[in-house]
Figure 1: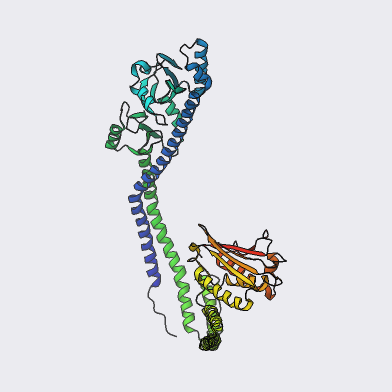
Figure 2: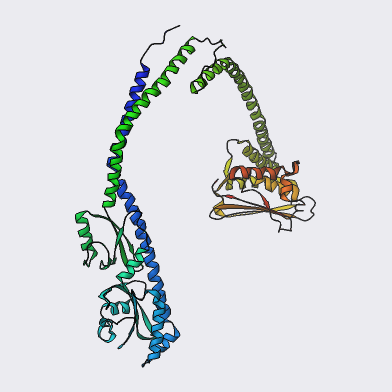
Length: 558
């Protein structure tokens, strides 16, 4: 027995397992150091983006809600009947005031409403002087109310008497019988915006601060640390200069605002520092542990392999005394090896037998090809003989039968266009008309879009054959067979209709019948399901009473 050389495989595998462990951990550490900042920033930006979108959706729904309230008030008949008067008494003022407070509900401390009509003003708070319609109709919020009728808001900074800061306004015109009387104006404070944004939970990623501006960058709301800044461009310049915040924004053109979300970088820095400290703490113990495990694994793996190699080298192919010594994976290798020895001769004999069977099958296949080709060539001889003798109808029948036979002989072509299938049907119809004379008429209605679609070969011809052979029996009148083919965005539809005797059984009974009368329908139904799935197949239109109507649909793309 040849001695197995000692190539220190155990040392080799131990060394490389340790090296691999060290490289893996170091690579992970280096990659983590380089990517943790970017991934953290990306994660936080995604979260901030989600929060901004939530704020935008919430803000949009609130403005739309209050705009609808203003629109409803501007169409309220009681309100219009009062506001169109020249003189409005105390009771009528109280009636309007009640309507305003009903709209505001519990928000009257942060939202105010104003009715502006000539020299007449009515408000839920003290009316700002700039809401005097006779003096300032083309200034500020009154000019905005005059020129706008959509959801867009107007940045309208002023201080209420209770020192609340007004942020923006929306408005609605008051028109009675096509006569303009004034405006309904609704003012929103910064406190209202803050309360609205407080409903969005941002604590899971750290506090997100917001800046809301008009489309021309005039600040409407700002709870970032930099106060008293009136334009967003200046704010963004200050924020970006000290790199304290990460920021994202979204634009809402429907109501005319931009929403900026700012989050302090300290949250990201804290996460990075935690990750770095955890990585450094676990790095060196992990390396030591990996080396220890590598030594144990190499010894456990190498020694049994060496022992198995010695036994295998000494075994003879005809020997059957090779036995299993282990119950682990190496024991399975021992079992597989002796099974391999026992089966080598068996596989050799099987291989010889398969070669003989393959030769026999090849001979049979070549023989099976002779008969159809012989028949096709014979038909071709009959056709030319008929032409030479002037019997054109026999020549035509031989030609059409040759077309059908040639199509059936092409085993490699299983998918054809609808156009090719219809050519086959036309050949078959010609042959059957020669047989049945004028007993039936064939009508084809096919959309042009259907013709180039691909379908399994012989999918339609058996249905036409079934309609002729079985549908035309026992009727004395002239038979009519129709084939309709049409298409929509997803499916192809086919209908085969005849005015024959119809079916006296359900389609399920017919498809489960083992007699030869049902073989065409069963064959087509089975092939449809094989190509397109069990959800597709033939169906019988039970509402059709003047014969039979078989329909099916298939996918446009097979």
